[in-house]
Length: 251
Image (cartoon, rainbow, N blue to C red; front, side, top):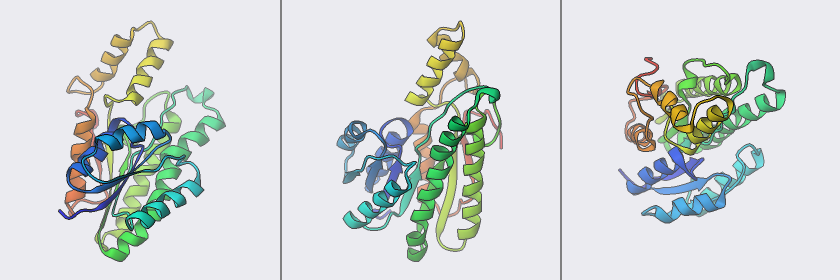
């Protein structure tokens, strides 16, 4: 595979860091973005090839334009976009405020939409591109106490499917990866939240999340990166939401 220009959002830790390492290990140039400059620089220092560190807030439309413009100025148009940044908040529906709802849609749906919209024209012009959006098992099935997150993830899967259909003849593929509970800082936060709200210890809370998945353990970030690598290398898969959840959702 020739060297490609990649952008990974939410690249400072967890899945994003694993994906960045996988893409860089394949010889690609990788631009990294997230809110934490320090985390991004730690990830970049461990990559084997060229990288760009561009910290910022993806919920700001102006930053997304600056992000893509910086990559284009330094390297050229983005050829592989991995829209991984996201966040989850749990609350009963009756206590899900407008502010929580808006914030969840902003980072989990609107930000990926803006990134995809910005990336696609140059990919279509080149006749090649890969768009991979990190959705969630919550894009396939509802769960209690995460109505805003689940709505956003269902929405982003719809975005992927529609965009893939629109671009099917262009050489650009558009897919979603739908992880279950992954061993990341985001899951650590879920464990703390469960422990704080129940009588469970942190270890018991983590075990409960692992038990949701038929394989009986958390998914690793590298297992998610495996699927991203597959989607980058093949042009025959598009419009799909590929589950990486240990068999929890069979679709």
